[in-house]
Image (cartoon, rainbow, N blue to C red; front, side):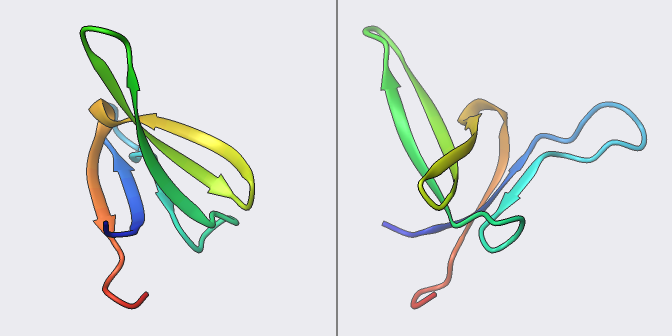
Length: 74
């Protein structure tokens, strides 16, 4: 499985605002992982943002516009 390098949220609908972005190596972010929460007849896919052992953010995959993966060997 490829390592996730960054995730970018959907473009806001208002002028002067920018999408939420989490990038490994910036602002202390050490990793981005993913999981699926099984709720019986459906599941919710999540991206988890980590600084060391602390989860600092969680983004629902439904609101992620782009996922960037690390190159092989990074």
